[in-house]
Amino acid sequence: MAALLALPGLAAAATHIVTIEGMQFQPAVRTVKSGDTVVWRNKDLVPHTATAAGKFDSKSMAPGGQWSWTAKAKGRQDYACTFHPTMKGSIVVRD
Ligand SMILES: [Cu+2]
Image (cartoon, rainbow, N blue to C red):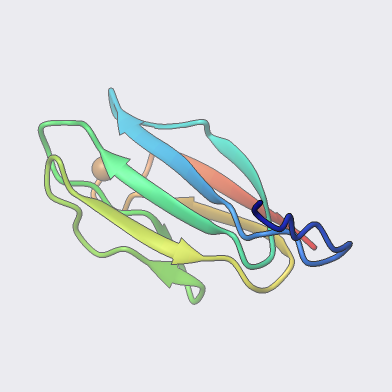
């Protein structure tokens, strides 16, 4: 019988997907918990980045590529694609 670890405050870290498709981050706003991982997946036919100045920078994600980042500091991180500055998204980190 498998032991179930469900201690308060020790919930397992989750992984959240942000799909890049049609020159958009989907969903545009993603709420995660500190310790969770966010994975951006580029489904477009052109490269993109997920860049929050001074916070994180995926660098160029090739078509079909992906990049992951682990959220730590609480707060809202607004980011954009450096190649297409009209592409914007946000990660909201809660504890
Ligand atoms: Cu882009």
